[in-house]
Length: 238
Image (tube, rainbow, N blue to C red; front, side):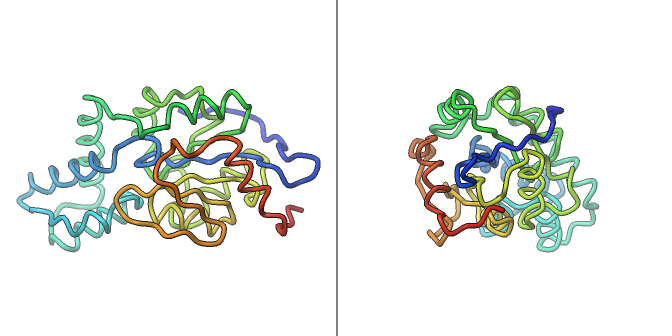
């Protein structure tokens, strides 16, 4: 489910204000990282393979093809990548049909962004069918559009998803703030030249130039997001 919207120039006259907020989904807005792992372990268990917890940190937050490819390699399964991806997607959707809780502060942040008219997009490595299922919980009305991992040639950690989202909103990447929970997502956003707010879920993330680390979305609001862009006074947006 995507919104068909025209590309609009949202940048302020001084070229330095917040132009858009780009949000990851799994582990950032919705507490699904554990559910994905349950789906993966369940599918591989059906095939006779027990996944060690050590692989959880490797696959969390990554595009499905990469994550499943890694699990195929370590288990030596004879199932194909396509078969496994369909099976895991299906198992995940079965699990979230029982409910997937939002992360603390997520609902309030989405409501605040909408109230302030901040252009907001959902940018996920998850497939379209998964995003559409989660939009029943998140509310499609909270996003100008959503971008799925299977709708772009190169997904995270490549910069392409965030570059595409910023372009669609008519925003300069340096005037966009990305909110992510994994190193893969952070790498994608930083490669695109965006300001980053990291809210680590399973794997620690260290602060860095252009990257602010918080412990919960309860610490993130519109004035805070605007301040991140406004502090980047040396960035030439033109």
